[in-house]
Image 1 (tube, rainbow, N blue to C red):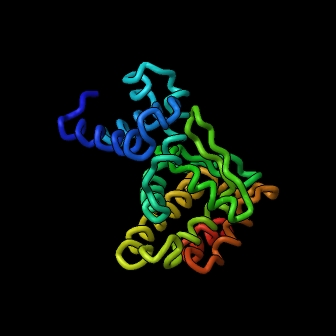
Image 2: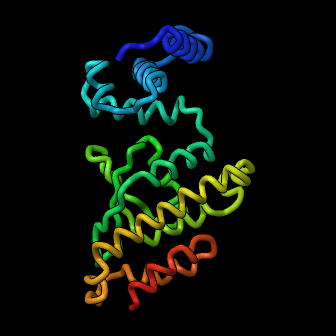
Image 3: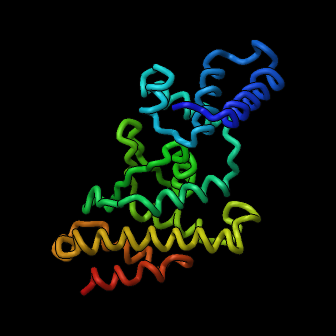
Length: 228
């Protein structure tokens, strides 16, 4: 993928700032410089497609993914609010699938894998953990945990003082959409099975989550469907 002159200038400026001005010539380890170069190129072309990046830089896709993950932590300039704005927008565009009716688990393809660590951090704060498959980019997690994370995101100033007003209103719209997509998938594909399965954790998860202070009212409709 070719770069415009403007992109080339911006790329050079960032590398100059990090590699020369910040660390001094030769002060950055080769691995870090490789990560920086790949990261800044990805920002310039506005794509983190590891297949295309691996082809451009002539490296394995697994190495491209590893370099991007390292660079995101070392050179990423996103604050928590901006990261979650992007993450919720990404989650609103994916399709959710039931991974396990018995365990109450959902599966979705995270198209912004570099943001997974923010999602995982919130899961840990909820005393749980999500599973991310780096090769398939699928995330598997307990539905109750996903609901608790969304409920936290619903709150004012959850990620700082900028998480309010129009910014928060836009994110709440994403959250409503995510809840709706999860509910629609369960209702359209698994409702009859849920009514017959006595061992499934999903009904209990839906019922408990319908009591959440922020998003509970959006889950109540699905709980009523499960009960009828």
